[in-house]
Image: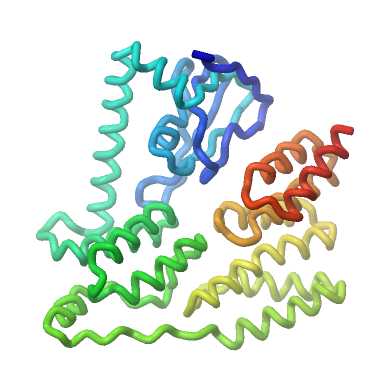
Length: 341
């Protein structure tokens, strides 16, 4: 087998971001690496040190789902990087490693199951399977765990095609696929709705349209931005991005785009630190949003303006790994060539 490669990281480097595509598996040889992720209830940020000689990035790579944590280097580090085929051959000859990983994963799974049950208040009698599945999906959605929410909504729609919550599941699935937060005005999930549906009395709730006021504010802010009135645009974008009373997927989209546009306005105003924080916040909150690549491009441009060329190259390289190939990809490639030229 080809075997692992050795990779060295400088202090402050990111080995991988949360929601990055998971391919490689890592072993810490020396230095210090911190894993940052949210607790199972989505309320607490947890930071965990990787021990020397310890594997990390295993679960997401084996499960072929995006990273659930961010791995950041503190003070420099050297790691071994395995491709999946090499890793499988390596551990196949070391039974003790397989047993150790199984114990760790089993313990983590029990903790997650306990937390989810606690969140749902399900220490008493279970309701119907359809209700419980929908309830689990919504708990994941409320906590910002969009990948698991999407999976649960899709399972509900596949298994209960004429169920009581089909309209609700489709609406929430569309939001989760855009990494949009659970709508604050959504009525609580009602078990009575399912019982009424079973008795033949269910009527789907009509979908609400976009809020006219939000659309008008967005148009006004866009006009200010187009005319170079960045301070006026930023003030409106800030109000829009802070909006909590979302009533539809269209509202969520306006709020999402406002956060991105706020970052651009701050950049044009020369408020580079504020712009960097805002655009980083967009990437973290809307990992699958329509402006992720453009936001990362501007994060690189801001880093260039601040004289942080290595950081800029790292950000531009991140864009190259995000599909599809488009004008933003071309811009990132050109900027890397210019910085390395």
